[in-house]
Length: 291
Image 1 (tube, rainbow, N blue to C red):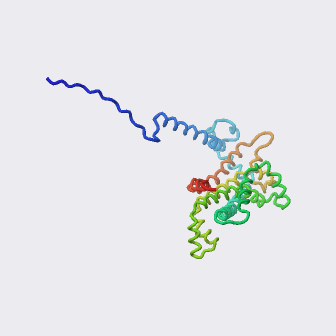
Image 2: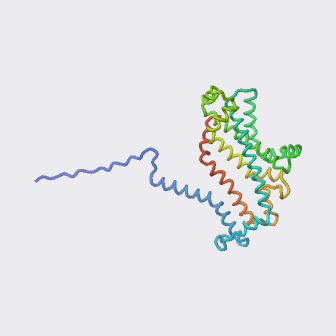
Image 3: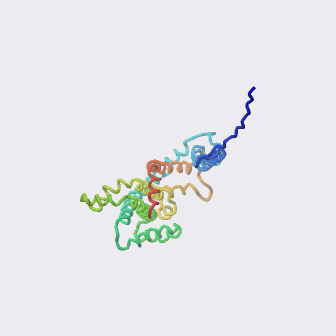
């Protein structure tokens, strides 16, 4: 009779690969992301749902009791929202267009050429970012008043360019530094002028950086409040930032039209973001490599 001796089976612990998370850590991570997403989306969802409620329920949590578009109708028909919207669109559009042109050309010049005052120019662009709005608003107001640009879109455009161009020029300079200089040399061999090289060869490669510059310039002009409130008076001249303040007075706030206006204001910014989103990460990371 042959007897078999049972052998002990030892469980081999599973080796976790590098970067692999345990089930507990993965669950905690997903719960954290869900909570963070809810916190981020909640204010936007609250404003949207409030804009669809009657005025009597504006400050209550009865979101779906009486859904109505009355707030949007009153906003568009009984206020000058469309005028404010047009003014903001004009100012933001000009700021974006001019800001991209100046930032791209400045960044390319600083990245490729040596000229007297180059270091001073870069320091000037950097130092201008250190001053808060509260410090600059009075001197800029006096300058615009002396130039006769108060209560005019051109005054706001120039003001917003002083905010967006220094940062965007630094970013574009860093982006152009990542483009090989051999491309410029090949353009010179083909007989292109420096501007021709910049326009035909470099700019097509700089689309991610240009997208970030355009997005930043647009958001700077579209959502700015302090300068717009100080420089523009009269309902026909106000931008959206100044127009929204008319819905708030010492006795309370008109939550219905104000939330409806907030939803409509967010649409252009969202469209610009969707247009530029595929270039944002590439452009910002490339612009941060060198500088």
